[in-house]
Amino acid sequence: MKKLFLFFILLANGVFAQSQEITPEILAQKQLNAYNARDIEAFLEPYADDVEIYTFPNTLRTKGKEEMRKSYDSYFQKTPKLHCEIKNRIIQGNTVIDKEYITGTGKPFEAIAIYQIENNKIKRVYFVR
Image 1: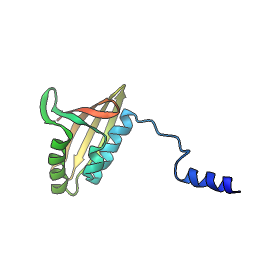
Image 2 (image 1 turned 30 degrees about the vertical axis):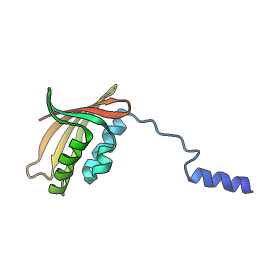
Image 3 (image 1 turned 60 degrees about the vertical axis):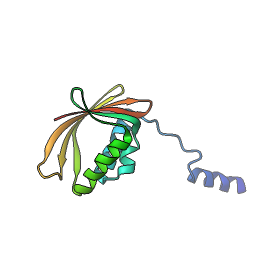
Image 4 (image 1 turned 180 degrees about the vertical axis):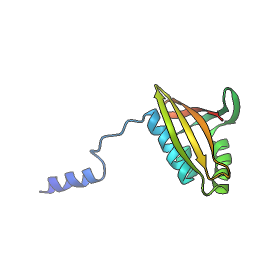
């Protein structure tokens, strides 16, 4: 009986739970969920420390997670109704392409975000507007 009880305690604490594979889609969705919640720590978690953010095709806007923190934390605070809805998502290998509809910024707009994944982190993002 004690062994059965211990088994259920371990099961409840996730010891025997299967680990979920980290996929490019999961990383893109995690950052989107945190973006919509305006949770800066959860938003930055899927990104590589040396992430690069570009305006398509090759204009570097931000380099590094700490630069992202500064700009996005301020943006989140200034836009309490910020929301991004995915209109279409394409996943090809380690690349996720989202067609987004963003509201809560004054005038709604559409954009395309291209996420490139390396070593289970978002390494580069290209924005097309």
